[in-house]
Length: 254
Image (cartoon, rainbow, N blue to C red; front, top):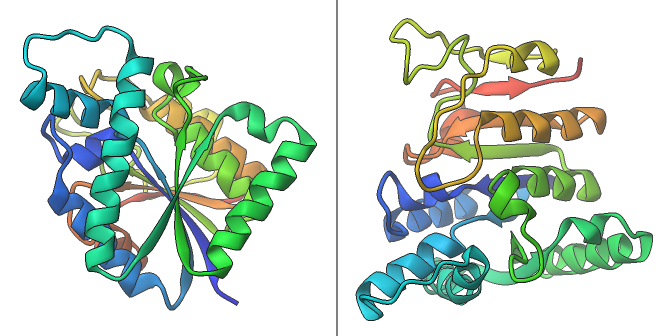
């Protein structure tokens, strides 16, 4: 039986250091899914709807200002899925959209329906692409760029691994953007102790900082699911991490 890998792609990874969705990064993700398909069933949790909307508005609706992030998410979600579908189709990858809120995990009936849907998609070799339904919920916009959602999905599916793709190599003993002598911590068991090391920095686009990733790791640690934080800006980032070719942080059982 294949292992289950939940891969969370944040806005900073999808835009690849710019303000626009990077088709090259989506291609990179598609290539890795193909290579990993023999070993893993992969579930994507992808942010980026608001960035996709701003990209469209910049090109087609210049001069119009849409203030509501929920409205931007509603505009951007189909655009984001179109990018995924266009590129994944070129790789022969079939994708399905799943929009969720945290409430879907609180009600037992909703949890069961969600689990059944995801398992059915996986059974027929569809890649679920999950995002929070920002039209009806604001948690992801406010609290963490889908970090918590990805952890809840991993727990629901009893996944083997949660990978959080970020714009940083992992957890450092101090903020590497502020301190040149910061050192990466390769393995963390006590997440509460690690929290004391975090110095947040506004990335300007995504909403998920390091604290939200630690919260996700705590959820998974309770379920004995390993969590990795990897720099998604580097090509082949998941495969290179699995093969031990790049530095990253892993959270293991306490």
